[in-house]
Length: 397
Image (cartoon, rainbow, N blue to C red; front, top):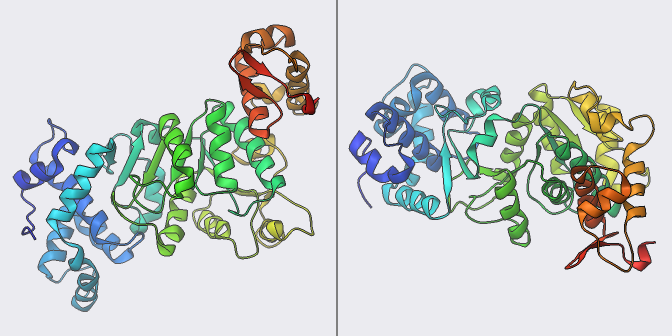
């Protein structure tokens, strides 16, 4: 094991390409210290947060390594914390994580960087020390407004359909959609946002270099191309139950509102809603059949936690404090989405494939609007893309 050092030369060497060439020694040391903290602590460690808040990343790390007394922690508290942290203080392991990040085109974003999402500061001493990001880090500074669409992994067809509709409408209208990359509602929300060319953010409980769940590897790659995949734990870190629960606080903090589409009575999505409530983020819940166990949690939010009833993207925009978007204004009262879907369906053939431009001409709509509707219909399985263009399966008529 290489002896740990925090001097600027060592920090520059280990950070490698993650250290901006123009950064001064103080900035480089602070950047390296933030990365080290992300290796040492479990997400949400308030003791580390208090130390960093009071002394900054570098001095806090020096105190942690040296074990000296500090005004914000008793010697006993610091000694107990060091028992958790010091076994992970391995310069070689930290260097390996950084090299993996470099190979996988993963960026590191700290509170000193322009892309840092300031809304994470609402977490106080429980804020992450840095973010590991696959995709475009700049998108993190453009998340106002944004909405988290979350829900059960074991979602019903109804829940996935609603998540698709909401996310496609919102992302297609320029509102980033945030979720957790999981099966069920999360996956439906990400797929819909990607399909309409919108921005979507996935928060992972493990390192961003390994897709979890593995069955969503392709989807998570798509999310990284259209937005960003983020974690507060370094490359190589495994997702654990605790990290999933703590990941939920990041979903809540990054979003301007949370919409729970489906959730069981004890669903992890209710944990996300709890974090949202603690951060004073508005909460929406989609009602479901009263006989469905998959909606018991959303009904609980509506009944006990004063959540707003969400039945459409227009409701979500209202939750965000926005006016009706131009695309929705066409039909908030008259059912524009239904009308547009009908017009696109009418412009398709069951025999010959037609380009989006041809469908737009026949439907009397813009190519952009048609592309958004076709993407949603493809996700629903009611249209298909063929080498000759879009067409409708005979059974769908």
